[in-house]
Length: 114
Length: 114
Image (tube, rainbow over all chains, first blue to last red; front, side, top):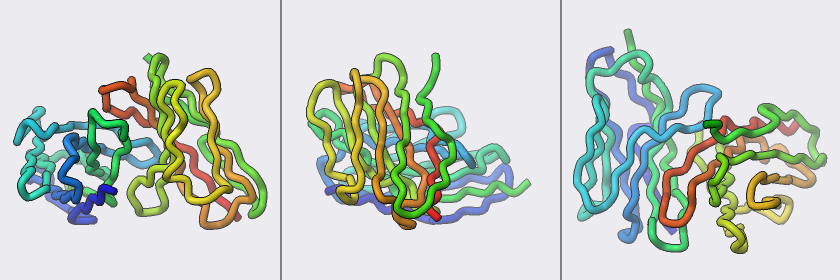
């Protein structure tokens, strides 16, 4: 099955700086890579996703890059704000097959210092 | 519209007791997932329902765990003879199904087994 590794486990950044979280996956058939943000006491919320037919996707201050050859993908948050503090999870799955299970990384706790 | 809802939000039980956790998916979503999130860990897939197909139970950790989905909507996750290691947050997600893959999560049920 798919194995997703996520680094770092914790990340502290100064407000206004950028934050980068990196994930690797093992199954070359994976073609869908979502990122979720989980705030304390809440369920994960999808913030951005990328499919294997593109290398980069951007949505305001958030961007995701994908390198299929190396089997890794990254989340970039620019101009961080205190409300970006949360746990972020990357995930991978193989859309279009009968298997829709998402395999999650272990999460990154991001703290934005004011 | 309404998102995924779960009940109860918190459940404290004694070791050996049975518990039932409920999930109400987004109306019209045919796919429903259960995940378990242990403290400081990523999300662990438990079970997946898609329409009227047989559920994918490959993630259930033991035969003490079972789930059903009545009428293609509400789902109940049952844990029999609970153990302390069952303590975790149990998350439910739903998606439109088919080739649509975005999973929307509920707030979770925090289960504590004393």
